[in-house]
Length: 250
Ligand code: G
Ligand code: G
Ligand code: NA
Ligand code: MN
Image (cartoon, rainbow, N blue to C red):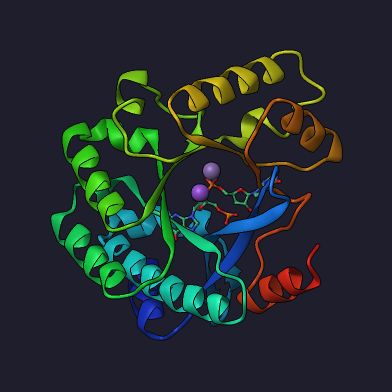
């Protein structure tokens, strides 16, 4: 596969780049973390989005090397941010298959353990269901290394409350599917409210993703949602733009 070979080279040729999308803590009125979203600056095709290459990376066994690159980059960016007065926790998306990859888990822990960077991993529930025993054990290993675990895309995949209660996760991200039409739908507010209550009962903080309007933000605030992320606050942006945004204190 030509794309796979190009992608393999892209990792070494510095063609990958991370954009960061902030998460706002509602009660504290401050940005406490940001999510890293990978992009590929392709020499001829321009900026390629992850939807067009993550699946290929997973199929061609490049996802481990790519994610280790992402962790290294995020560690450097987190230290840089902290030095510039913005000590945010940076979250990285971790593909499900990596939760059962012993070599990946060891190398990721070596990288994170060798730094004092504040990091988090975002994983989907669907990825836990493939091999629950090793996923839960490895997530605990990450948590013991100080990595905050967030459940991503909650409600959009295969959910199991039996696994949810066993995961060492501190954050639950409600999928944007339930958030983008929050104030124009009858059912979405009921689903979001009960998910917030469930997460709080399990002692997790709730992040609503896909917050696009002031009306949605207002309703989420009333419902006790802890954090919000979405185009209303910021699109994913390069590190320097994130710093500029944080410096402006918006
Ligand atoms: O960035 P966008 O806004 O297009 O993200 C699309 C999807 O790609 C999201 O589901 C996101 O979780 C995923 N994604 C973005 N960056 C990474 C990454 O570094 N690793 C993995 N596994 N998925 C990522
Ligand atoms: O699967 P994951 O949650 O990691 O996906 C993140 C994706 O959601 C990225 O493609 C990002 O660009 C997109 N996204 C982030 N904020 C919003 C938003 O407010 N509205 C919509 N429609 N998409 C968003
Ligand atoms: Na994510
Ligand atoms: Mn998500």
